Amino acid sequence: MSFSLIAAVGKNGELGLHGELIFHIKEDMQFFRDTTRGHKVVMGRKTWESLPGKLPHRENIVISRHDVEGADKTIHDLEQFIADNKDTDEEIFIIGGGQIYEAFAPYAKTIYLTEIEASADADTYFPDFDKSRYDKTIIKKGESHDLIYAFAKYSLK
Image (cartoon, rainbow, N blue to C red):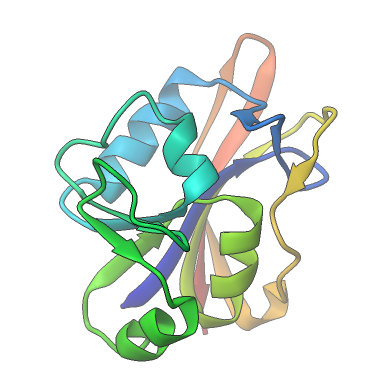
């Protein structure tokens, strides 16, 4: 299984603005909870700090130069963590931010994107990835507060 990226993105790959998510869709939050429950979630320090607290029912791993209080584990060497885990049978979820997605994108076997048919101001974007390397499955489509979205799963061919 190895690394899976999970994010909600706008039409242009928008992820966040000033350390906050741009799009707030209740169904997306539920999809995130259901999909990542029971797994390791890996994030950068800024993403960790943007959370209301530790994500329950998951092992919270933060990538940072310094130890992070409250996290289950702090990773100081990103390249070593990738090397140690890229061939594991365990599904490890990468949950942000932009630089962390960028670092893990070449190793992603699965990418779960809530693709939102809207654009917005952003300062953080999901990295471009070669979609031809993946099979795309639409898990579910929906609409919330005038936002049309689809839960898409990209699986490495």
